[in-house]
Length: 206
Image (cartoon, rainbow, N blue to C red; front, side, top):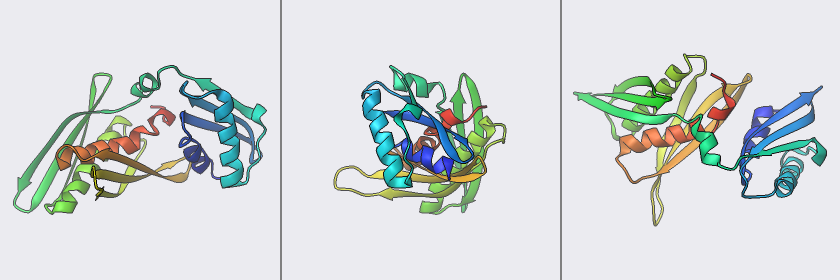
């Protein structure tokens, strides 16, 4: 049973902020959920049961599901979220160097990276600098690897997407973040990458 995959899937359910499975002999004994108040616990519980049976062939009794509701979802997530403090870059010939500074609780965390100055590689360099700043926040106890960054074009708004991989509980987990392409490319590369990371920040204990 892949706990990380199940918890990640449950977090996509409307109103759920995060989830935590408790196993005994590889059998679910407890499922703890934190959600906002936009939907009733009964609705959320039914969705959880439907997802578990349809996606993972796991039939769970509703009595095993514990749901704690938070009035202000954004307030809870802001307690964990890393924010952009600064984005800098220099160009030396064909070399592009990026520096990203993140902030949390009035503390600052810096990540740098450099590489060849091509249009697509610049996005990867900036996103990797962001991940290095995140690693600085964790004191290099948690690491994240950039898989890809790219633009998704649509008729109305272009979107910038960042795909990141990390390891949680000895299992690989792929994270996806995105942001609308309204600012310069360097900024959206950081925003999309942070969007991927901030989705699971609440699961990490620093």
